[in-house]
Image 1 (cartoon, helix red, strand yellow):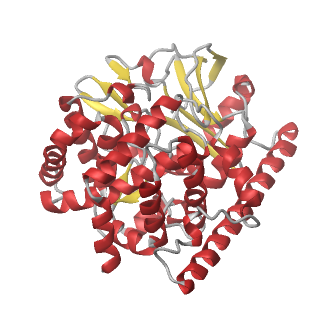
Image 2 (tube, rainbow, N blue to C red; image 1 turned 90 degrees about the vertical axis):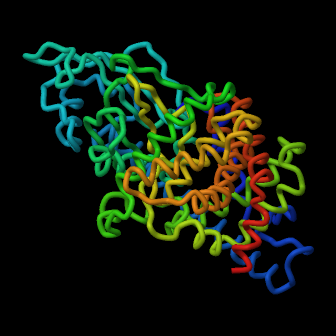
Image 3 (cartoon, helix red, strand yellow; image 1 turned 45 degrees about the vertical axis):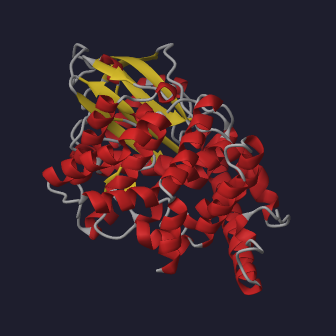
Length: 451
C-alpha cells in the first residue's frame, strides 16, 4: 500500500490520551439531544468512555511491546526492523527456515542478500526488494528467485504504534501463514512469515519479476476503473469468496481467529468504535462541504446502533474477504486479476468487498449508471461458482455495507490519511458520501433499527 501523507497513529494517540477527560460535544458517542433521551445519552456516554479507556490500555500494551523489542534488538532477540539487518546471511537463512509456510517455502541457502534502491511506498510498512544469490543454485527460477519482496514495519514510531493497536500486521501474517496457499486467485507467492511482539517480516515473491504482470497503485483510483475492468475485478472477488463460503467455523477460527476481526473481536471492537467516534469532528473540519452535518448525524446514529448493524452485516454464511479491495490492491497478470496486501482480511459477506471496490474505484457518475448491473453481475458469478446469491439479496447487502466504506474514508481523513495522496482520500470520501445518499443507507438503517 502506498505511503501516507500523514501518520495515522499521531492523531489517534493525541486524541485518545486526552479523550477520557475532555468531552467533545460533537462526538456521537455522547448522544444527540435531538435523537436520544436522557437515559440513552448517559448509556452512550458510559460506552464511549469505556471504549476510549480500552483504546488507552491497548496503546499502553503496544508501547510496552515496542519497548521490549528495542531492548531485545542488541541481543538479537527481536525481529529485524530495518532492511540492513536482513543483509546478514545467517540471519536471513534462519528467517527463511523458521518462517516457512504454505506451498512456496525457500529451502535454499542464501549466498548474498543486497537491498535495491527501488522504492515501493507504503502507508505502514517498509517494502524492500532484495537481490539474492543462492549457494549452489543459479538465480532466476521460482525455486531460486533472483529478487525477493520483503515487508517490515515502517520506521515511523507513531505509525508502528497505531499498527500494533489495530493489529493489521497480525492479520496479514495470519492470512499468509494459514490461508494464502489455499486462495483460488492470483497473489504473490509467500516464502516466509515471522511475527513477534511489535514486529513482523514477510518474505514473498517480487511481482515485478512475474512476466506479463501490471501492478496498480492508489493514484489509479482517481482516474477510476472502466466497466470492463470492473467486471474483471468482480469476477476475481467472486472466485475468492466462493472458495471459502460456508467454511467450518472451527477451521475459520484456526486460520484467522475472531480475536483479529476488526469489527467482531471483543478486544478490537471497542477500539474501532472509539477511533470512529474520534474521527468525526476532525473529518468535518477537513471536509465540511463533503462530510456535512447531515452526514455526521447519520454517522452518529449508525454508531449508536452498532450491535444491530453488526447483527445485520455478519449473518451466516460468511466467507473470507480481502477487506481493502480497492483498485490499488489489484494486479493484472496475463488475462486474470490478482490481489495483494491482505492486511484487512476477515470473515464477512463477499458483497462487502464488492461495494468497497466499486465505490472507491469507479467514478461516481459511471458507477451510478451501472451499479445495479455490476452487483447483479457479481451475484451471477457467485452463483455460477457454487455460492448462490440472488440479485435482490446482493443489492440489500450492498446498501448496508456501503457504510463501512464511509467509515474507512472518515477515519483516514479525520485521523491521518492511509494513502499516498490527500487527493485520493478526499476522492474516496466524496464517493462514499455520494454512495450512502444514492443507496439511501439512512432508510436501510431505519429498517435495521426497527427490527
